[in-house]
Amino acid sequence: MNGQNRGECYFPVMVTVLDNAPREKFSDPLLTAKGETRASVGFRELRTLWINTGTLCNIECANCYIHSSPTDDRLTYISAAEAASFFDEAAGFSDALPEIGFTGGEPFMNPDMLAMTGDALARGHAVLILTNAMQPMLRPRVKAGLLALNETYGRQLSLRVSLDHYTETLHDAERGAGSFAKAMEGLRWLAENGFAVSVAGRTVTGEPEDEQRGGYAAVFERENIRIDANNAAMLVLFPEMDEKADVPEITTACWGILHVDPANMMCATSRMVVKRKGAAAPAVVACTLLPDDPQFEMGTTLEESVRPVQLNHRHCAKFCVLGGASCSAS
Image (cartoon, rainbow, N blue to C red; front, side, top):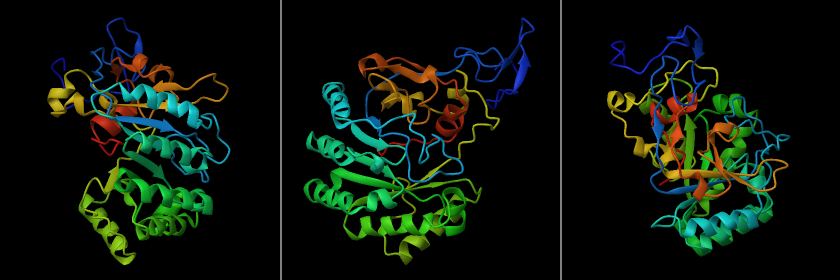
């Protein structure tokens, strides 16, 4: 760390480097603002293949990391046939079949969602669906399809419901008035019908983790929902992602300083497929957090995506390295 700040990975927003030219943070894929070697993560194995179903969503959150909304279709609906081609490639890609994760937008907005889920399950994949559990999921056709899949495949299928906070006030402040009640309706329906279900919350309030988990536990007990709030896999608390926040850059030295193994980073074991509006074919990106940054686009096949990822984004630092978070269930 060049003799300064050896106990932490911190760099000022802008510094003067040797050529006296100012360099902003996260502006160079190979070097930090301080001129040190930026950390990268090599690919190890495909444990989770994410399918982004499209950025259209039934609601618009105040701080949506992927900027989904009822009108934003820059990532358009991927079709069942397009998803199937990646399932085909994934079958021989790793020693074990990867988990298939579906995210959006709201996945149940996609008309092929049930078909894609059924295809992945029939091939033997474990499937995780990230959903807000609101109206798109609660349509009669979708509920009937989910019940049939759950009856056939049981715990092979799981759903993770977004519940940003255990209080209606703070959840609705993020997702809109009435959204907490609707999400709870969907969560109750899933629990009552025996689905494998978990919840994703946010740590935006700054309250102690045990206090936050206690708040969720009270909600789950009140609603008779069998989720252990103290189980980190059943209640996932994600760090808030602020695109304007000043966060440290991660250098190669940071792995040792922070005692973090790069093999545990999400981009070491996962990739996401997106379909850009107007594109002839889907593309593979490094992770679920950065579908719009061109430096994280890895090609059009899984094979092309097998190369190191430079951690040249604040989300890499805040969410993954410092936050220790991962979207996957595996």
